[in-house]
Image (cartoon, rainbow over all chains, first blue to last red; front, side, top):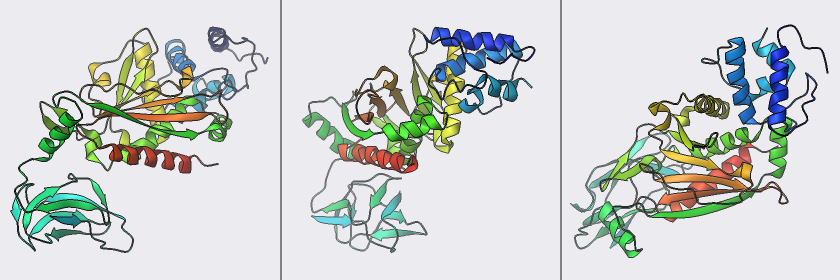
Length: 82
Length: 287
């Protein structure tokens, strides 16, 4: 697993938690497509959005919610946290 | 008795839209009298009565009538019944009570295995699959106002906006969230709006606006691997779509079941919508 960039440790922890909640092995690569592989689903996206709003103050109110923006930890960071 | 048929007007138009009735059902009309206004893809025209008689129509304003199909009939004697009264008699004959919905169900089946693989390859999941099906259904019903109608106190009411109700079961409580003007949305936008409502549901922030005035409801039990089920009809709606399927069976069969209010629809109208939804979805999701 790649070292998470500063300030995104919470994101990595939360993705691990989502994997555990859905009965998956919590180990993943930051570029792994968690939805494409079927490890996470739409419900997990909703939980991720809720998490990003709360923890990182990301404003989703005027944004098209595109599941592909949540496909991997790297993509989430690039899209919402940089 | 004389039949009134939808004439062939242009080489390309296979259907004519019923734009306006120029006489009332049951009126005594004479040969050559203008009965109703019909629309082609390019223009509108008034259809004249082919004979004298008391007129009866089989299509409603906004319906699309296939060219050559019987639009109505001219009777020698007064028909005495409005469309609703005619339908009421049919409902009673079927053992129903006109004041209550008379639910009936129809199902079509399709194999989606290879298409589901394509959706997954594109990084999308089952929610996207549902949105593509909803999009195809909406395109099929949008030109048919009857699919946005319901019966209230014995009268047919038609909504101005086509609003999707989507059944969510994220918590202990089942919510039907409403996405307004779904006929104006792309598949991607439908996905986004469903996610947004799921978020509000999870956060306990759904407002009355978020859960009211659905034209129809879509329920999916795909995630539960339920092959087929008749969805329940809600108050103020005339039909509901149930999406089922079994990913463990060869080819991943998927079923689309519509429960409809027989006081409003004939089975063949619903069958036509189901088959159009199926055909359009198969075409649009082709690899």
